[in-house]
Length: 469
Image (spheres, rainbow, N blue to C red):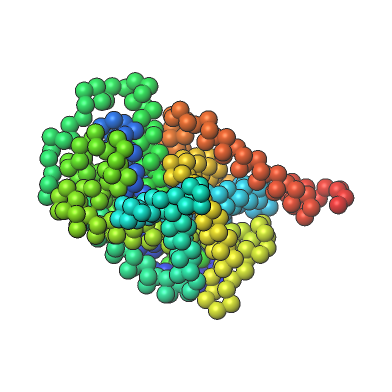
């Protein structure tokens, strides 16, 4: 019996995504504008070329976590990804309802934050091309560039208002632009490379508190850039032969993108001095455009800035596509607000979910980029990734008979190492207390809503108790 015939098919969704399209969507989700705006921030976090360690550690954590996603995605290829995983890990009719609801609730914040970060990055490169966009409007309260970010989000929602076949074709075109952009940066760096510029400053690898704090900050940014290798899991109900396709898409995406990121960071460090990357100026806010200007001239820099904007938009497109399936899956399961279960009558996609995430992301486009990234990473690690690393071990113990087309290598090391890595990222930095507060607010508010709703509907933990409405 084929894998497709033995998996749950969500009503209204069709399996149309093959391996190539799945890798393409993952890579669009991963690359985005992230590396083009965080490269200098990663270097600044560690103070020199030793920042490459942040990219290496981030890739290692991504690979460990990717093996977890690969096993879970192949075993439970449904729309919603982590929602379905957490529900099964902690009990479909027990605590899993609360934890999976809490995941959807935090996604209402973290997904739009992720989408908005791509839109803000796109707008920053637009401002490099057209400096007039930095002019504040509405009495100096709102920079014009923020309206560009919000407009790009609205445009992405409009393009996604169609069926999956048309979207998959657009994904290939967008991925081509993404690869062209990174390829151009690597070529510019390699052809004008100065190996001596990679030398780390004296004492760079001394293992003191400052070193680990800097490594934590650099790894946080690298982790933000790697995230997205699991996008195909959110579209599990639309993937062909998911038992084979999902693990391959997840792992190949990590290997390819990690290689590209490392090559790009080395290329930049071999052309632009560290002091230019760590101080305010064009090299800090539009680093790859500056790289191209120093190697191939102003015209090439402008072309590359346009390609970065293309890449950023491709990421926003992919993020909206994948995350819009999550509230839909929860609502279909009766564990979220019913309106999110609606499917567009003609194109068969969750239109209410797409529009809701897009609307919240537009609001976040008016926030500072650094705040957006830090809040996103902390909330998602604490309210999704930690629960998922623990949960995959719980699921192995509770349901050893469960069909697993792909079983992670070296179990249980991948989830344990990923868990240690994620906790290091959160707690190794001075700003941890502020971000922990953000996560706590989301967790408490989501829990209050869940328990009030569960009390009214007599669901876990109130099922079977004698309560009056």
